Amino acid sequence: MLVSATEMLKKAKAGHYAVGQFNINNLEWTKSILQTAQELNSPVILGVSEGAGKYMCGYKTIVGMVNGMIEEMGITVPVALHLDHGSYDHCYKCIEAGFSSVMFDGSHYSIEENVAKTKELVAAAHAKGLSIEAEVGSIGGEEDGVVGAGECADPDECKSIADLGVDMLAAGIGNIHGKYPANWAGLSFETLDAIQQKTGEMPLVLHGGTGIPEDMIKKAISLGVAKINVNTECQLSFAAATRKYVEAGKDLEGKGFDPRKLLAPGAEAIKATVKEKMELFGSVGKAN
Ligand code: 13P
Image 1: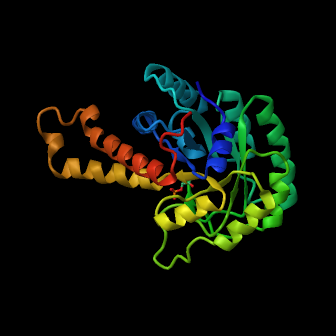
Image 2: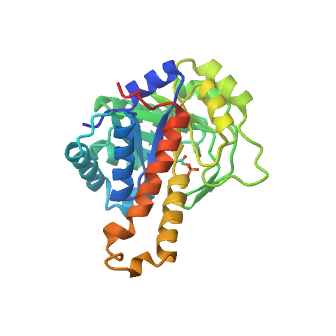
């Protein structure tokens, strides 16, 4: 059964580790992530961007697939199904469709409008037992064609959004989606520290988990990050393994063209990436 992210993140923040949010794109992706979480006895959050939602034929299709997998695969670790960077309308769609968690990304609105919309969505999500993430300070890089410049959130604005009763808060601390450029300045721990001091127990979310060096990940967790989002890294490992299979001519041998064979190396590669992240984030063995 799907659960909201509230409990798992409270435990993570108190236990000084982070739960990974791994974005899903199709059945293979979802299966690999769930299998790895179960094998490692780790809680997990499946992230769905609006673009991936459309690609997978809508939120109801995804809810059906994930619920079916949890049952058929005998998944017993806590799993949350979470809308990633949701707009106002899509948060409502996911609340209706059976997601267990949503993110409302109001970071591009004025702080007043972000507060008003977040407040309304907190009530709507909580009424149906879902957890809700809000965002302050836009996170740079490109996601689904939306390009934002990385910025550092204002700790006072973080507090005003945290006080609305959200269950987790994403705050820009110089992080960006996708690969980091060679001249990236790194995470602003000064900003993160100031945000944690203002928001106390609130589990903080680190977006753009791909390519952040291990020591920075560990430091971020020590300063209150309890959820880390990873997307591009699974895409890169899937693509590299698939490329290797095709370049070795394996699709031309026997029934190597069968999609169940063609996509298998990529699915295995995602498992390895998810395992590596769960070990780094410290969520292994934390399912109960
Ligand atoms: P990356 O694609 O950089 O791993 O970021 C994922 C993310 O933050 C999803 O919201």
